[in-house]
Image 1: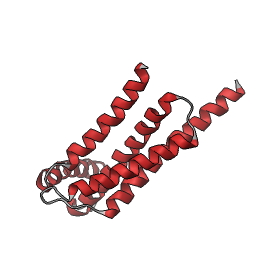
Image 2 (image 1 turned 60 degrees about the vertical axis):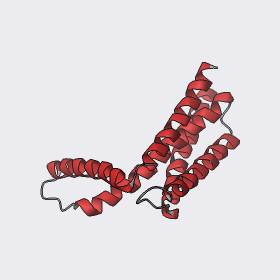
Image 3 (image 1 turned 90 degrees about the vertical axis):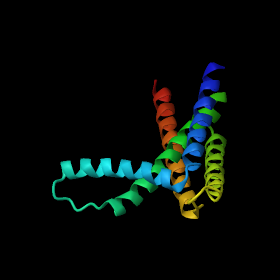
Image 4 (image 1 turned 30 degrees about the vertical axis):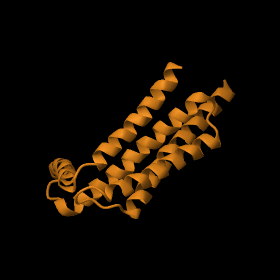
Length: 152
């Protein structure tokens, strides 16, 4: 019972973090991603001297990857939470994906009401791809575990 509660707490907590970040006005959100972008560009220019990476171009890449990674993590957490009741089945994976996609769509809708933000279908697709990657990763790990258990 404790593991079920923890699994759901992590999934709901992560969804709450996504909501909080989406609720930030554009100026705050952009400032956060800009500081991350500048840090990463500093690392890149240190590792690859003379690289021609520009903040403006890299900023979009950082923002879109943040969407992908946030929903990849959400997909994993949802599989963990839904799977906490028993065996991982196709229904668990499909339910996790459905919840993630609906949450992504509702998140973009929510952003329509935030100062300077907009809801983008493209972001829902990026979020959905991230969730799918996380869920597929869980499926592959589950298959590997099942294969190992059958051999033992």
